Image 1 (cartoon, rainbow, N blue to C red):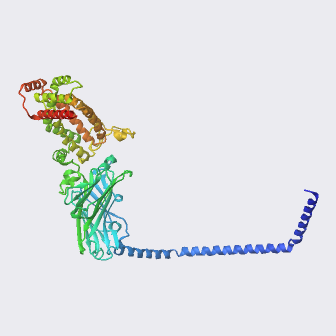
Image 2: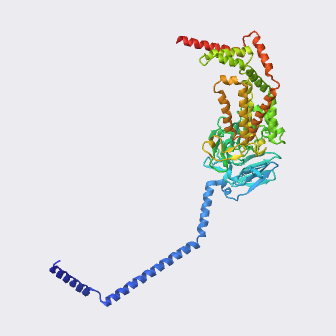
Image 3: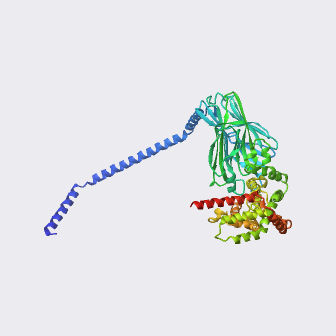
Length: 629
């Protein structure tokens, strides 16, 4: 910067300084401005204090008058409730209370909220691992209500939302009343227990309700829903058994598949009863006459991820309403065990909820197993199963004898079979070989399939027991040897979840199932040696004979220990039976019979002859087919 520029800037600075000094306020002006500022601040402070005081007075006034609006709000609420509930407005408030009735078998708890049964205890049974009476269901897991369409469908109410009053109570009888605002209009729910019974006789009375309920609705509706609580040792097995059964007037009892979640409409026939079936107990609603088919349904839904809950079920059932001043609809509840003879005494086909097996197989359980279990109920159930096995083996002894005799004949005929096999090499015509074998069997008087039919005749008993024993309440919580409950699997080692193994086999080792498996392998080995020619004629048969016990082990490891115990005993008795038959059925005698048969003139006919003829016809068809080519 040059000298002239510096001089210019200096002059500008001097001029600005002189101007600021000359234009600044005097001391009097500064004092006056300070006074004005202080006055403004004081005025603002007073205004703020006045505003705070005013707000405080408003808050205090609101606080002092808070009770008056509450009264006003309560009045408005009462008006709204009167408008919503009309004749039922007096029953929407109350204090929860529980009444009970009981006899020697059950204790039933009834709530004034809804006038419904909210808890049932079965005095003769207990939950697995507990000593107190078994609770079939509790308040938080059930709801039973009558759906009321009122005022020409303008309103719909559920009795479960209203408070009832007990008007008659003794040890075995209780009436719960829902009183409306009309003096002569009310609903009664009635509950009565008979002595030493699982039945609760019930029903509802509608008195003077024809002016309240819709005149254009001919059916009322009973709604019942429940969450099944876990009662047993293994909830997985409970979920596999829990479902809903139902009986329509024209049909046999039916049910929803326990492995499915389903909503089923019951519109094709009127309904007699609906049963909420658990593994060993049930809660059943039975109409004295019928529930209407229109609008009725049942539903099951699984709760696999809900601890302690087996399954959720519900039903909606139609009830005829005739719009008269006094109407009564009677029904009854069964709260008790799935015991065949007990259910059968009520003549309602309730025993149909117990899986006794399909068709003809069920008669094995009904005529033999169930009477035996009941007749010997005083003994240990493991011993009862032993007695059952002995009886079955005695009945099936003729079949076992036929099976053993057929195997013995095939065994004695082995030299001729070996010679025939040596005659035909690998390149020989298989049909020709088969014809020769059939001719040999016919000549010797041996039926190669005679041992198979007797074995098949034993299957109905096995299938019947497979269905019934896991559901037999006679075995529930009955221990034997190391098993503390024969109705479910016995576990001597629980190793936990292992990939694939847990899926195919389970997370534990059942000793009864293991014994059954080993004895079955031994039986298979003995049987294959008894009839070696049959195995040679059917490629792959030997593999299947040894593979099936493995599959059976995977199933039985999580099945009832009582059933594995039966199968194990049946195998062991078969060993003893075959060992004893060795001293009765002599190979020398059979050999003599075969030799005598071979010397006799051959007769046409018989099963072996038919097999031979079939083989010849098949050979002829093959030759004809080759000739065309």
